[in-house]
Length: 269
Image 1: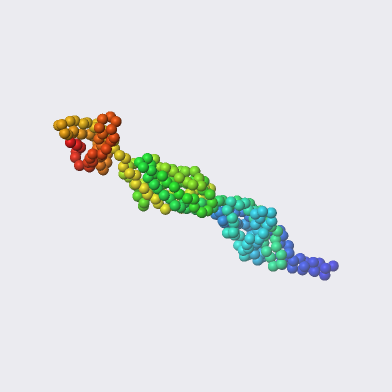
Image 2: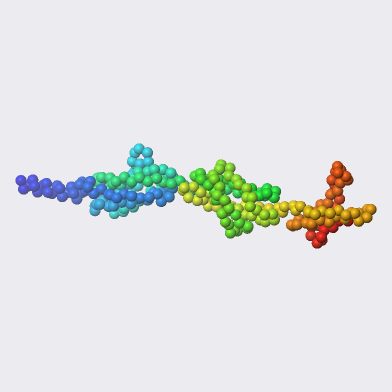
């Protein structure tokens, strides 16, 4: 009896020392977070003292597969093989000399979308005197939700937010809050739930000056062969064209031009 008892105690001791009774020492408190669209960080509690490693398994469809392992006493893991916008389930077990522990609790996490790529091909073109039209292309990466269009007066900035524009396959807007004779510079970036892209290259355009209507035109005959014209002018026009026709139905034809800043009170005789 004593011999059998000794053998039983000895056998139990050997089994325990080799980890055959390690099932109760499974890792616990497995948790983590999606650190990025392509990375999940995990951590857990180590409940054993003689493990040689921890194996990390992941299920993204129906089957758990091993995605990595760490050494003894290491209780964190970074899964850098994750895909964007995907739900994963993780579990961990301890490895011993001849067997494994049970599995930890399962941890579920969903990775976010990847940020959209930088917009490309930004072009700014003045549309006569009415505004500046902007067009650009979507960058690589995931689909944007919207765009932030920023404006400044020089290519080096500073820039301020002009408008937020909803996603389009062919994005474009027209900036109508512009003034003639001024330069405007633009840059664009894309956004979605995964983050914000970098900026596009800067595109600039200068609005032309709007022609100024001549007001208070007066024609006065000063002799049988000449007529004096006077008018009021406003703005920064670079020239005034004078046209004449005979009667009410004749054709207009240009007879003279004058520089806008040539005289204080423009006249024509």
